Length: 306
Length: 306
Picture 1 (tube, rainbow over the protein chains, first blue to last red):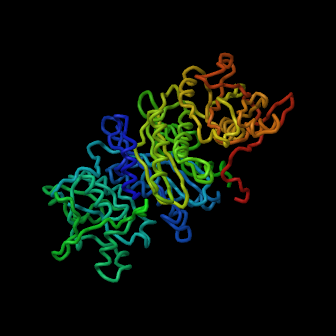
Picture 2: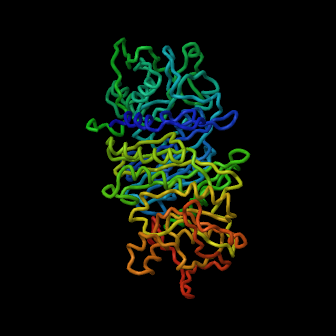
Picture 3: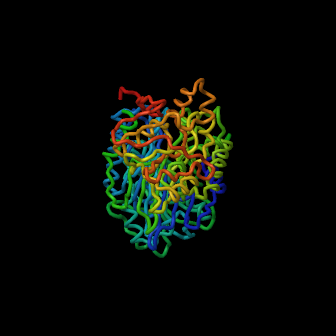
């Protein structure tokens, strides 16, 4: 099965029984009722040796930091802030340099974003993996979901996209601060983070809202690393559209509010890259030419045989 | 490094900043302030192919069930009940029979113990692993910690111990219901679950309380599976003392309350196996002979080289 089919199967098999579940499986985080003004957010994400990093090409400090940062990106995508984390580590051997490196990486972000790592689990494993659970909270009025985009809404992204494998995926800065400011200043109709690649995540956003989109290909903010690894401008756009692990924000704004969107939030660029359409098709537009956008982003289980 | 040293290093490196953290790293779950009458509980535990199960010796249904059950055991050890779970799965391939089996196993326990699985994560991985995060809650007055045992306290266990690898580790029944009843009926001074083996977990309990213990070896409730795999009674006791994955409760009761402890709770046997001592030594007593108890339970990282 493909990843999407698996997630649909899981959603169908595990309907929420508790009325306190505001959003269950399928968004960047689960949303649970908490107190009068706030929701609880729960998310989990793991990184696995030889899938998300290679031990020979990275330090344990970077691995620890990345394991936390990808989860912070999910909390940011809901408009929330992190509160607590738990960490499960699978290790082939309990070497001090490995543990210390991972710990230092995690502590760096725990101090920066002021959340506590309150628990965890260590297990022997034939390969290194780190699974992080992150809890957060969000003021009810600032909660943003994947769901909520309407035809005519403008589509935006933060930062620049593509080429994350060169270095950004190990040094990613989760958009916690930017999201906090965005949800206060801008009428956002839907938001998610870009983790599997813009094309893949745009299609997920469209499906969640039963809509389509048109993307102005020449407007996509291409990262300097995507440019470096590309021979042509077209190739660079392809990277920006399809490479995974950008960990930027993708959001939509109703047309009537889209005139007042600033070009930067804090110091991060905001770019309008397209608009939501009624027709459930996915198009890229460049020099007046329309081409179909396909989901070429990261998919863990592509094999059609399953 | 040994597992214990690693956990000490982690505890030291990551002190809690938030005042809402009642208990951080080091107990069966983290304990977080919630509302007037309740605490939140957070825990995580993972199972890894060829470490905690072999694909050839188990069904995916059993694997899914075990991944959840080991976490429920931690929630039970605090006197709590489960509320929400998130599940991270690492899979070599997205085969429908694997996903379906794991899902059915998880759903079985989610229905039985009335908690919701509200999120998760799927990733490609060279080996199958499942990491579960479990949230729970406990009424403040019923919270039980590892910490709290005093010299003179009687030591008890639920059920019978040893030989879990024969079949129990795949069919374990987390002691949620028993713990709920125990914390209401009995003055418990400290409680934890037995996951690494009685010897190992007794020593953890003793260290957490800066005390020692004496165990009446002939009183240890030996499971029928431990007896089956043993040639002598002594060997069976050795299994009960040192085998891992019992997932029973270990708890202490102040001496003055220990006269009224029932022999069963619900239908599960309760056995007094020893007492807490002021002297920080660990002894087993059999026929008047005292022998030192060593931590022979499960340790993920024994290699002294690290």
